[in-house]
Image 1: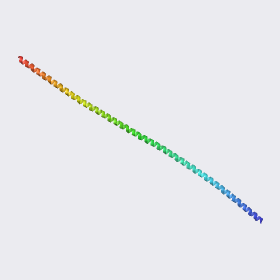
Image 2: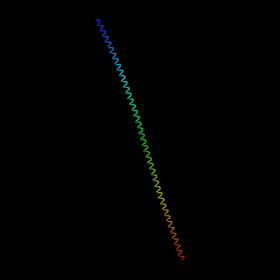
Image 3: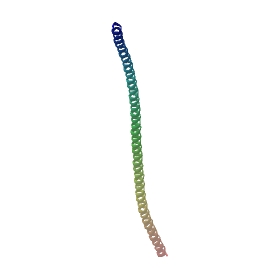
Image 4: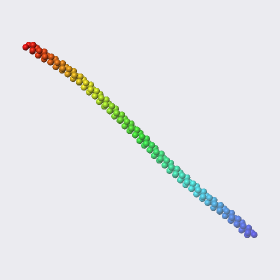
Length: 152
């Protein structure tokens, strides 16, 4: 009987030890599993941080590209506006120049007409004077001829 009790006590002791070993093993595997989970979670966080960093970098590059494009677009519009204003200014200057040339041509034509009119008037006066001189000369010649006739 005492052998059976001793055997039973040993069985109970063995069962306790086996229970402790199983618990220790389970605890060990639980710790390993927790460690692996923590490492996997850390890797996921690092991966997410890298993706976030990459996305931020891409967004910054896109923002910079958009800024450059916007500045170039604004510059092109400004250049086109300035070029348009320059063309408009040159066209207005040409119109003004043409107007001045036309006015000068008209003034010159008026002056030429006035000069021609004066010259014609002067010529008519000279012709009138010449006619009077010729008439006076004819009259003088006729008087001279009459005087010569009368002397005979």
